[in-house]
Length: 87
Image 1 (cartoon, one colour):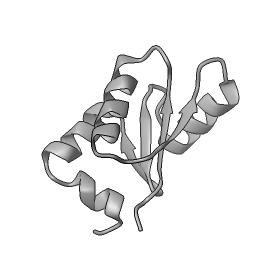
Image 2: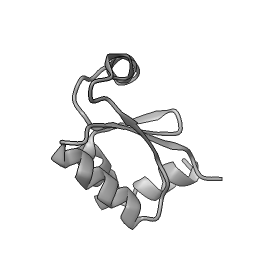
Image 3: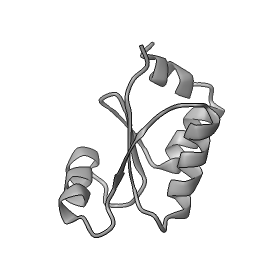
């Protein structure tokens, strides 16, 4: 079973669009949590990630980070293992 993906994002963010593209190219579903005008969701994101910038991406309970972190995992061949739930 694949791990659930949650991405905190903003409509205007280029890095968020890039992260969406990468996830969609892989055919992976994800839950989008928009932070625009939603201070409670932004606060939840900051509390979970320790960061205030978007996107913030979680695969299962693991905080991946932002788009650059996601892309680095993909480039290193480590992203699929996170999604598949294998170490």
